Length: 176
Image (cartoon, rainbow, N blue to C red; front, top):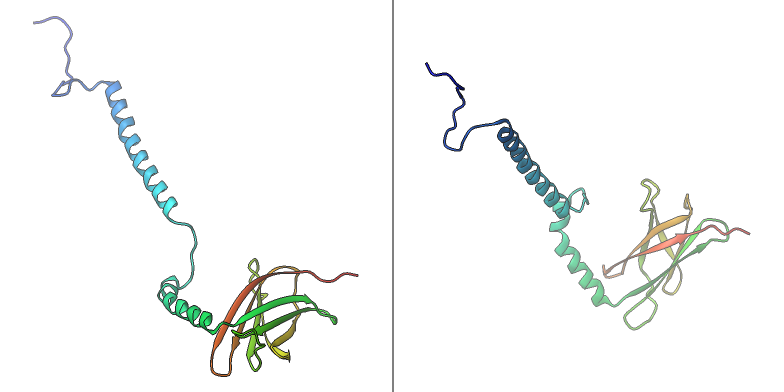
């Protein structure tokens, strides 16, 4: 019999599998997995801006129609000056002065105003505006809060022409 050490580990093609080699293989395998996962996370977060909109597909399909409406509005040549100020009896007065392509006041329009708050749901208000003088339309809104509001006006002419404009307004109550 032979006296001496006997090695039962099979070396195989790449040598013996020692503890260090197993550890290095284990760390290498999971290092590759973590690197690939990290790349996928980076790719996902850098290409998605986080904006989610209900009906995004339908809105995307309707975008060409919106562009056509904007071109029609531009061809009309109408302008609107939107102003807000405290009403004498309380509330916020919305005044809109419309002018045609030549600068003449536009009368006989059906005008609607909308106040909506970008930071709070459920406080939107929509009211029709009445013509108070040639080309000038007004109404009074009773807004619940001061602060940042968006004002959107929509007007329709006697021949079915449409005009929409939006403007940001900072509402403050008058204090004496």
